[in-house]
Image 1 (cartoon, rainbow, N blue to C red):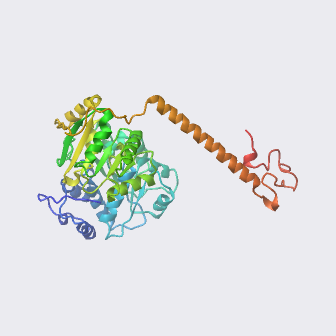
Image 2 (image 1 turned 60 degrees about the vertical axis):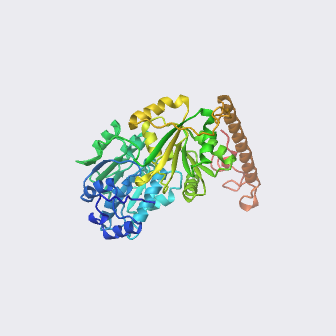
Image 3 (image 1 turned 90 degrees about the vertical axis):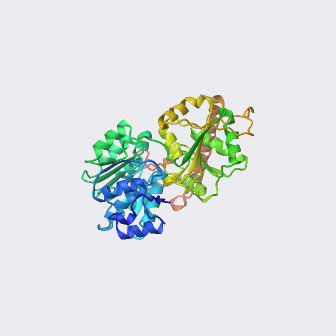
Length: 461
């Protein structure tokens, strides 16, 4: 749910030139004063200026671009998509849609999320009906652009959200392809938590005389995050996490390096009666949505995730983020821990560091400009030697080969079963499949050249 900071030093939302129906929606949500990024971004956006904003996750930037765009759309004719928001992940697209619906509850405006992992039918309907705002991931949007119904000729507003994350995920070429489908005359709002070279170059290509916000600010976690490091042997990370969950940690979003480690860690915790789910790229969209919903509702105490979910997970008052594996780059650390202490609330970010990960930790500490405190748990046995979560390479290869062989055998059995069912099925006139009459009433294949009349299952390469 959208959360806006009650900042005593900022002006109220009523100070901005926003439509009254939007102000009613904001008031219903219980928010009176904007966050700093909203204070800086909304006035020039309302004036129609392009924006280049360096804004951290959890700073309230979603409302910073939604409010001025929705305010402008209310007075425009309906039935044409006039605003597009590009995001890196499905979860973030779904979260922005949820925030938009909450803000626009008193308006007639509508929106749709367009991302992979779900059917394209409802998304096609959104294009054909001309919803006011489309929130999309680049890959799925390009899939739709192959069809004639997906035309955004009336587009007036473009938002590029989490631009640096899109760079990390390899979306930069896709973004440039998307831009070729959009009108060149538009207002563009560009948001990125960091500003690496390729993103700065992209912003220069996209923006016209933009207002820049906090562009000089060095990347750092939010001030409300309590950070600490737990040195521990790699093989002891899972038991240490279990000990932490049995103490002061009531809920936790736990990040692992790979999808397979996420699966194994979730299985380890589940076998020890921890209410846990996992979210990563190998999970279907339905599974990812259910896992996130269960974590938000409190059904799951722990949500294990990979970096694909580091942005887009928005959980009210999330108390703890735990880096089970040290992220390889400082930006990933910042965005992981940014899941807590959102909108200047408070939270804790703990990182489990094995000796071989100390180098990556030092890089993170240099990037954020501070040395993180080291913590040990008094009653934990740091000398024990439990089985590691890592599966030996030879065993992993053998398991993959066995699984592939089982899948091939299952496919053969299913194909044989389908072929047998087709042979038994009665054809026209009571004939069995494979015994259908030819076009002149004779045997199959007569009358239209060799091979005509064969069923697909009778053909041979």
